[in-house]
Length: 412
Image (tube, rainbow, N blue to C red; front, side):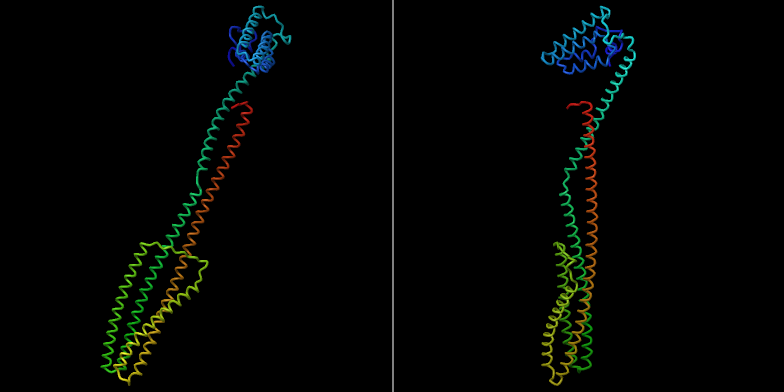
């Protein structure tokens, strides 16, 4: 409240007619459609004002209303302000002889002046609160803008893209694990083949020794020499074949290593549909077929050699040679079958171990992927909760702001 208003509205005896009070300037605004209400509230809430001011305010109010209706600009309000000033000055020169509106002097209205002062202080407090609430409103608006920007950024996230990246990573993990299992299988198969060749070599050496001993016991010296020469030739042939097989095996191993390095192998293991007994039966059938084929080849080769030996030897010793050959043949078959059974048992054990390892690896990968998926789901739920909380906060803030605007009479 300005000093002019305090002098004019509160101090009833110290009138200052040279200056224009603030509330008179307010009510004399051109086109002021609220002049009627404010004039009523003015002289109803100010019972200590001079009656001349009351009459001047009435005339100012009517002229302001007429100017608002006629839309003639600021001239009527200025004229009313001049009339109000002239009326107040004239009444001051006449000594304020006009009677009071309520028939009571100004000195008796000290309590009302105090209430007016209290109302003025309340108005000041109210204006301060309005300014403070406007500042708070601005701060809340900045917070709401920040929350909306965060919401826009969170909406900008593409969860499909993250899901695609996760699926790509899972595929890469599966491919790497399958390649690893394939390499382990190849390494173990090569080791088993190496052990099989060693066993075959040992079996061949033992068979050769037994055959040599039997021939020494049954055949005479020249025959034994001939057989020895033949056996040496066979040994040389076997050594050559063994060397050839070794070279071929080394070449195959190198080719396999190069293929493994250059090529990518994908292995799909379905543990649900796998039947170990059928697989073992198929492997046994394959190895039986291979064994039969090898035995047939060995039989053909042996029959040819036997025919050549029988032509050179006498007819009297043919039966003995045939019995010895059959005996050695049966021994070879027995040993070969034992070797094949051992290899099959070892391969079955190896396959069972690899199957267990692959199942363990698959179970571990599934557990890790499930944990990652649960973590992502929990993060998404937390983000949704945060977004919902922010939406609730923004809604409550908007409701409070709207209530505040309705109370203050704010118009955007």
